[in-house]
Length: 119
Image (cartoon, rainbow, N blue to C red; front, side, top):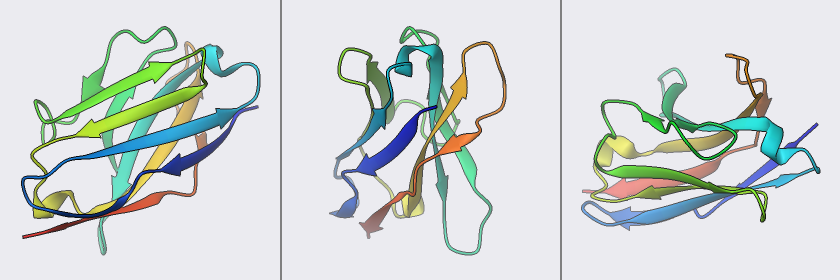
């Protein structure tokens, strides 16, 4: 299995940028599709972005399309989320997630990292 640890969260002003990283342990990282989700206070967790095992087919929630970019480095066992033009509504705990290649369900999760965007 893969274990996931997020980093890079913090406090940023609206319009600013942050880069989240997720470090994955385990030798089978390249067998997993990866994703980012977020959960704002009082709201359900929502999908942000995903990327397949080879780094192709990135998909994004409409709310972040054009502002966020997901990428992965299988040699370093990392997946990143570059967040630009941040808005106050991007404030949330961001979670890294993994799913076996060829499956739909994300069933491995990190503990999350807080992103706070001040207006």
